[in-house]
Amino acid sequence: MEEVEISTEYVKLDQFLKYQGIASTGGEAKILISEGKIKVNGEIEYSRGRKLKPSDIVYYKNNKFKIV
Image (cartoon, rainbow, N blue to C red; front, top):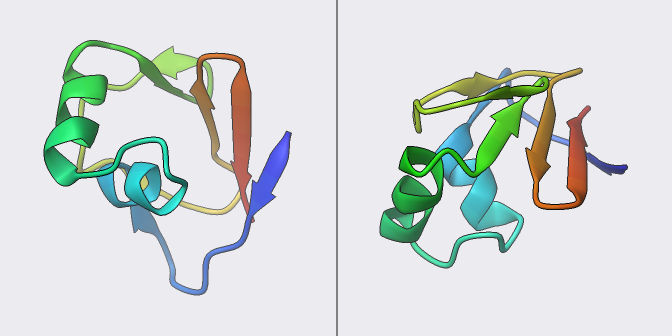
């Protein structure tokens, strides 16, 4: 599991996907999320504005990212 440090209170899911290089654009992030390919804390997340806070875990394919 990769730990990803954020310097703000939260980061939005679509921004996180771009920051991690999972999506190259906001449009691509939107598609990944709307197709149910992203999980947050083990559940499929359909809201691209989902606020990720420390201790949240994002799952994509075989990758896990823990927000710290």
